[in-house]
Length: 143
Image (cartoon, rainbow, N blue to C red):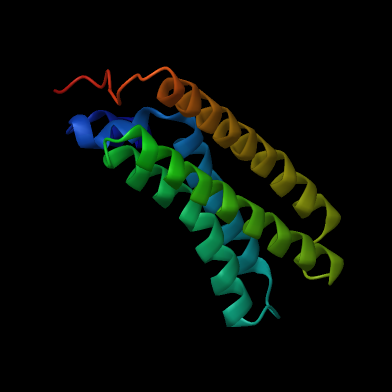
């Protein structure tokens, strides 16, 4: 069902849905939401901040993509990278304080590392395009 949702109603503005990094960032949010929902003594404010930072990753990817400008896209990918750093710091603090287990952190770290590396590679790719004067484009097919 999930793939069907992403395959319907295609247009130029929804092209970010084809990005693996966007999909993985969504999955990372779902993972953290589930994990933090199981932590009973975590203050609401902390839970909210952690979920805000991880939610910001996919949101900034989508917004940057929709700007249709390589310069702005790079800026939003960098904001997503900043949110990823913030999120890692928060989850590490939860590990150190004993609010999440080492096993949970290890699974988080594996997922987070993948998203982070894809963000870095996207930023590099966009920077190369900008440097060579290539314009923003999308091969997203409209249906």
